[in-house]
Amino acid sequence: MDGKKISKELLAWYDANKRELPWRHAPEPYGVWISEIMAQQTQMERVVQYWKRWMERYPDLTTLAGASEEEVLKSWEGLGYYSRARNIRKAAALIMDAHNGVFPNSFEEIRSLPGIGEYTAGAISSIALGIAEPAIDANVLRVFSRLLNISMPMKEKIAREQVESAVRNMLPADRPGDFNQALMEFGALICGKRPHCSGCPVQFQCQAYAEGVTAERPVLPPKKSIIKIEMATGVFEHNGKMLIQKRKPDDVWPGLWEFPGGVIEEGETPEQALAREYSEEVELDVVCGEKITVISYAYTRYRVTMHCYLCRSVNEGPPEPVFNEAVEGGFVLPSTLSDYAFPAGHRRLVEFMRKDMRFADRFLI
Ligand code: SF4
Image 1 (spheres, rainbow, N blue to C red):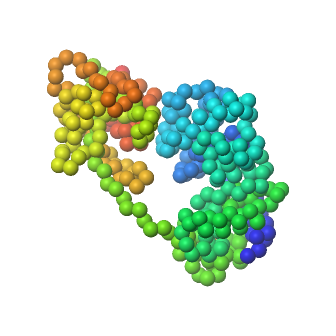
Image 2 (tube, protein in one colour):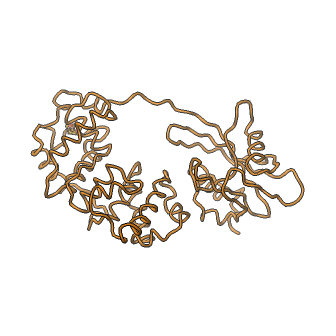
Image 3 (cartoon, rainbow, N blue to C red):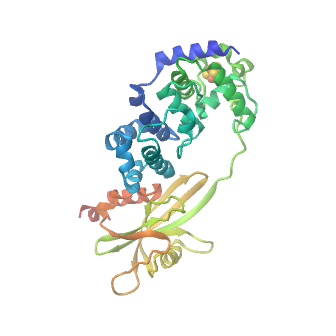
């Protein structure tokens, strides 16, 4: 395989075909960093929207480091993986403290920031600072599994080492950032899950193409089993307000808000599970009322079915929740729910109620 030739062809292809992305106009570390973290497992069109909004809200590191965790999580809402947003805020604070507010300019220092791994450090270093470091993401691994015809899953250490060595050999000293972006872009647009080999500028160098095995590369690792979970969630109303609570730092989705509820245990109905969860989580005795909806969503290898109900207290007098499983909580007006960051399922529940005729008028107050 002629690495130099591939590098030249890919750069020429990139110059002619690259997508217009706002952080590409004048790449600087802060903007590239945010785009890279947002782009992990998100469609590029969505990344552009979120990135523009983010840059208006937090135009620089000083503004970002001064924002509360609550604000940053809210800005991240919809992108999932909230630990990424928390790490961005932590890294911004660290840059303010340890680097006098100036983004570090070496690969090692960038790599040592919270939430920045090998790939992201390589992308920021090469794209924004012109440092010749590889940036190997899933697209790049897929491309090289074919170019090199690698017959093992790309998660294997040896496969990754093969790819890294090949990329290092190809990285042009004068355009490392463009080359890394060319590889990623090529993987996204041409050598995707279903490769468009007929329009491929490096087909002549592709070993999988030569062997007729492009459809079998990359070799997939054994599938992890899917875990199905049934949950019950209750919207408890009092004086026109709804009860929400904030999850603990060591919980799944730390710092996000939710309606109380939990996993339906074996032998329980959703209504029984909700009564138990309310008693355990907030020390309120409730019964289920009207069923609001059922929401299904996926989270890593979990497939969650969430049964959502209105619920009410069985006792007289004002409810006094005790938050055993949350850092704080309280009753809020439905119209203010959009000020809180919720995990995907609960956010969809709020949106459902806002649009459903049975509940929509509650959101007008
Ligand atoms: Fe990918 Fe096909 Fe090009 Fe090989 S020939 S690099 S499989 S697009």
